[in-house]
Image (cartoon, rainbow, N blue to C red):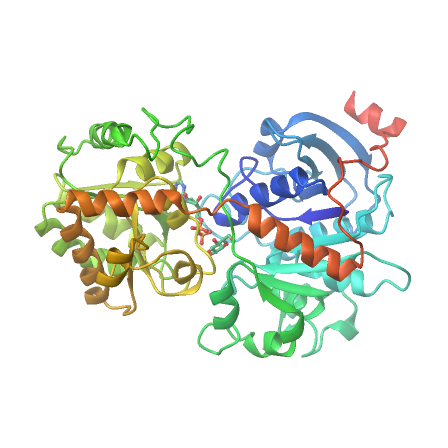
Length: 507
Ligand code: ADP
Ligand code: GLC
């Protein structure tokens, strides 16, 4: 089984959020099961410094007027996951963010940049480049790769099957119809059954409409987005695809996220000996300039600072939190107004609250290990990974009952505590009161060390590794392509051929 996995980000080559974590962990889990996966993504400058054995394997013929593109092959660090980076000085070799410039404005040519990603993927999939490798299934992720299922659907002859995954219906890749001539989509596809969405071109709608199968990242979110409240205007499209649509829960990469082996922690720990977690907490308090006290509950929040993640509600709860005997540690970046307000509360409650604005991967690990409670509320959450990391680190999550949060955390009500099934604290109401009541329950139970310890043990014993979910993707690939899956030793079919021209470029 050969799968071309197409994504805009994958850790550690490029990351803005959970898509990057999944785009690394799922392909690795598939490779381990004998699937021949190749990952294709844009060649952002930093990605080259992070892949192993980079080499140019093909010069690409001009597509969409872009004539400077080559494919660079390599592998993910410390793994045998092969990656192809699309190197194009015009489109991807620039400083700034993946999707935005340094001032936080979307790159004006995003439609072209990600249309190009799909066009290159389609050429690869149809063996119209010099790469001698043919996928059975093309797995396109999020709006960035949304045009890919559409492009492949236009092929007359045999073509790979397509799976499209939406990781978040709120990010749609909608552009004015003026981009149409530049993105290589035939006019007849720009209808209400195709890419047209309220007069715009929607890359997400293209993926949802043309994927042979469509998935999202948790069963509950899969049900929610069939309704107008969660479908962001595209629920009708999904209802139309009901029979080909399903939710598969994300897992976590336990080679990176495991308190027993985590290289970012001052001290590692495991369920049978959790003493190292206290050391992590003191070290975190020290690092962030908070009073050192292993008994004070530390509440962590590592997240995009956005409306989705209820960062505004957390802000509104800060005064209450500051009145408790607790510390709040925030690491995040996002909406400028929320960032500014967060910095203000840090100044106001310096002995209780620490706010780090920015993106800091090692600190995210230290926050998970050093906190007792993780805040992961959300107005909607396709899956959410931070609550899964928290469970693994014995940090009990406080979540709202929505999407993947509802699927992964069991509320510590009296019954679940007695049954020893509880793993965290779940609330329904999006108001500050909703959040405070769940956090209040958490802080009260924290003062009951034996019960707390039992909850931690149960949380740490949850299995959210990719085992079960990778198997579900394989079943889906098998079903859609008609190719039986035999978990044999991996046989890579065809070698990447390095034509002489590419060798010259490499030199
Ligand atoms: P989303 O993708 O919607 O942002 P997820 O929970 O699926 O939410 O994934 C978020 C990922 O991004 C996690 O790996 C989390 O640790 C990480 N993350 C979020 N904000 C930061 C930050 N400021 N610094 C470091 N890591 C962060
Ligand atoms: C998106 C979602 C998040 C999910 C992640 C990976 O960013 O917001 O809930 O965990 O994708 O699928």
